[in-house]
Length: 201
Image: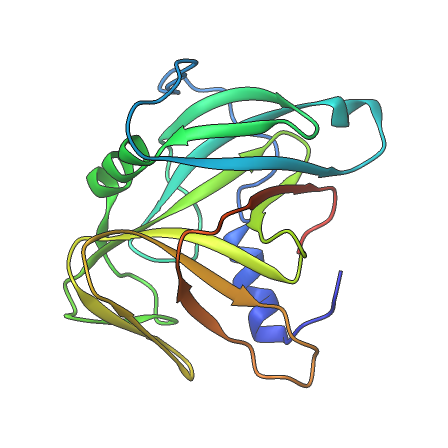
């Protein structure tokens, strides 16, 4: 993959933190029903030629209190998915889970205004793989975050204006080592890749 600035590498590493073998827990929620209402559809891309790539164990989790960092112990949508399969998840369920876990920002990288804004990020985890959202070109990483109110966030030279509470997609550029990294709000992508890799981003 394209090399990018060290600061961005640190951010993307945190985005994928916890993406190794998911722990077995009794509080995992599993749903096989077709979700009602708004949905997000992801396509699984596995960058591996081994036999384990045919079926990948996935879980979703929550990073409370910021847009980077480690997920908490609550996991949901535990499933096993085949290479190239599409996964349709309820946007309503994701927002409900993130809203319940959201807390005031707790990392210095992002500064929120108002300061008591509650935020959470959707975490992705897979057995034996690093996992994360990407655009189809693999030039941008994507992340899905929740905020509980209209607010602003600053990360370095990047300024984000969340005009409503709820779920928001963010795009993280992967520039060359000489370029300035950037992160910005985007509309819900038409195609969202759930990328599984044997190496970290």
